[in-house]
Figure: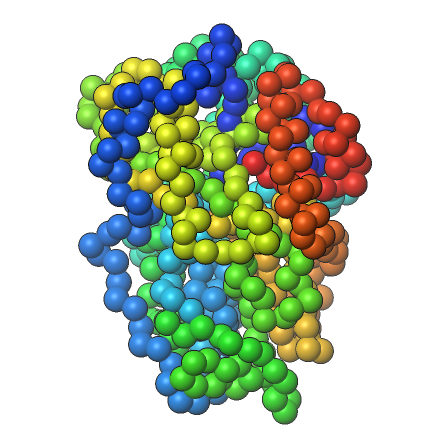
Length: 500
């Protein structure tokens, strides 16, 4: 964890938020699942709601044979899609090919909460702690990046339910309310509080009514809500319309120098490219030396059935902000376009050995826990059922925000480690990769955030042991008014941690 309580306050995931008080009242957590919680899950489909769409586009054919291009983009999630799109916008004559191992948007880009944040640093507290001298620049670039996403959505008519409603970080314990007030004062003193409102208990409950809410910080412009899979599908269409050649079900198997460029082998063909951009994130990088810098963390979410008008009135939420609570083990929640509530977070599961496997995408014990937390937060919604329950892997690094670099004498660029905050930040990462491949010195490439890397994770069994101890310590801190034990203080000192 980044040092100080601030690192627990302004988060977005993205993939992932919550608090002891949200999980249960002060009198203690329930001893076990109640019948109504498990009953609410009886008809939940084990698939991401966003991807369960009859309008889902058909995949493009796989590559067969040989291809040549100026730029090859590996990965059909946000990172790769933004890179391909911006590359063509910068130079329409450039030949760009994008390959995706399965289907565009099928992994983290289609499974997240749909929070599109301006922050490039996994929240302002993390950025202020790690790069205090650059934080005003990073915030300005992040705001400009979110503006550019909004402009892109309009320019290409991307039907992705984009709503720039902001986000409220809520306190569910008295000590968290104190921390929010202290943090707001810090922001104000640093000249970073513009567009952020501090809400007391009555004010936050006037926005969204939960008996667990004690205070809130409303970032009015820094976060948008959207349909994540539709964003990916829309970007795919925009790329194709600009002339990007997209191949799906085409995994990149290896990467080797070839003459003045690079060659990538696929199951049924080969691609030669002058430059390569890697947007594979959680999946093993074709540049093997950067693999130790990320580990997979599995995050889980539920989606309710559409709320009735009466149920919506019972909780308010007229301004449709995203919300997240502010402890170490946190929830994130928001309304969809058809007035369902997405409720995710709390558990963050690291599989031993850092393996990414389909069987980890489904975790009934977490679904039951999340359902109990949901009804404690919104008791007025008793009787609501969940229609979908799913999970997916996030690429986490030890500083919680993306890192960048090049390989093969500058002919290959990569970006990874977004730690669940990649819906917006991957567009910035695409610009960084293209700057690096062009050999350009820009305001982006001069950032310390871009020029440095996080510490790598240790090999097993040390990685699993350290992460397990950190998770236990974070849960313990939530139960003791945020007080951090010796292990967490030591991790803070070295700028390390593990996001919940």
